[in-house]
Structure formats: C-alpha cells, structure tokens
Length: 309
Image (cartoon, rainbow, N blue to C red; front, side, top):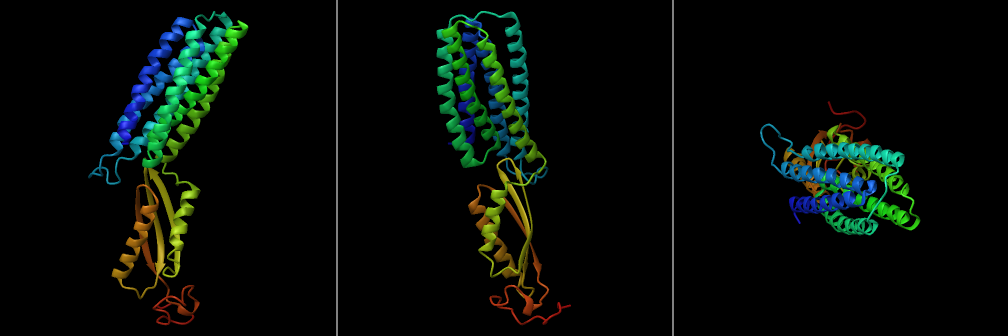
C-alpha cells in the first residue's frame, strides 16, 4: 500500500470517530468522551498534515533542495506532537472543571458503545499505518500510527471509567479517567516531538543502525586499510551516510571508484532509502606495518618503516 493511501485511510477514520465521539459526548455529558473527541479532532488535523507531508516528501530533489524534501515529514511530526500537548491541556482544564461542578453523566450505554467502536477502528487503522511506516520508513506515518495506538489505550481507559460510573453511580470517575488519558497523551507528545526535533537537528540515526553499517563495512576488511569518520543523519524516511575509507595508494582511481560503488550499493540494499557518500584516502605505504599486508596485492611496494613521501 502507498504512503498516501494509508494517510487517506487515517483521515477517513478520524473524521468518522470525531463525529461519533462528539455526538455521544454531548448526548451523555461525559467529559472523558468529549476529551476523546478533542483528541480525535487533533488526530484528524495531524492525519491531514501527515498526508500532505508524505506527498511533499516524495518530491524529487531540485535545484533549491538538492537533498530532497524529506524533512517535510519531520516538520509534520513536530506539529503533531505540539497539537497533542494542546489536546492534553484542554482535557486537563475540562476535567478539573467537571470535578468541581460535579456534572452528571447520562446515557452511559451509548458512551460505552462508541468507545468500544473507536477502539476497534483505531486498532485496525493503526496496524495499517504501522506496517506501511515500517515498509517505507515514513516519520509522518509512524507518528500518526503512534497517535492512533494511544487512542486505543485511551478509549479502553475511558470505557473502563464509564463502566465504573455505570456500576457505582459516582460521576467523579469520569473526569478522573480523562485526566489519566491526558497524562498518557502528554508522554506521547513528548516522544513524538523529540524524535521529530532530532531529525530537524540532523541527529544521528540509531546506534543499532550505525552498527549495521559497520557490520557491512567489515565484509570488506581485506580491502580496506582503515575505516573511520562515519557520520549519519535522517531526512524524513531517507538516511544520509558518509564515511572515510583508507585504501592502498597504489590502487587505480577506477578500482577505488568501483569499490566505493559496491559498498554504497551494499549499504543501500540493507536500508530502505539511503544516500551514501564515501571519501577514499590513500594509505601511508608503510607496508611492513600495514594491517592488511597479507591480503593487499600492492604489499611491498611501499617503504619499510617510514611513510612514502
């Protein structure tokens, strides 16, 4: 499934849930359901942003953006995180007001039904988004999937709170549940924003992914005198990787170029979408001290003990 199709499904599901939750929330006078409607409204805004971010990030590089448009997704993810912070603040405010005023909750069966329906829809859509995000490496879809996953937990929490109100008749559990939901989504807002900011600030890719790169380089251990200066960053779903390798100074430029192409292709095949830049450097030609003297076809051509000037 294409990234834009997955984002479109998210938009459609969020529109349905916003209308359902808002209608039932007003019908029951439940702050926890209304808070869920607010949450889903912001999720709808986030889904629309994710849709356009995905479309924008797929534009090819141009003269003004030689590295592509991948950061569209990072910007979208940051705004999504900020929107969730806003939603949490609104929910906290409304919950405290409900605790003070002790507003009654009505038509609880309708509230329980819409929360159960919302949880099922969000489980289905979040799984689609998670799968497509993993396949494509889309930051925007990953953030959208995370939002819907938290909606599942919050819907279950609201369902539980309403069930307690239905059983005990004590309406204070409704705003208390809403506060718990707000705390939960505040944590999500922080993690989503932090990851997006990392991408905008050109933070390195994960340590595990960098280790995967080093493992690939080790396959060429007999051809490289040294490997150093690894630098990585992400732009949307694209990884930018550059490094320095040291090779025999007696190898032809053509041979070194072919070697670099092979390594770049090997790295690219292990990741979804990469731009790899390799800077080759000549060795110092001290062959008797060289790490690969037993494998290098040029061993013995350099000086013994001192670098070749």
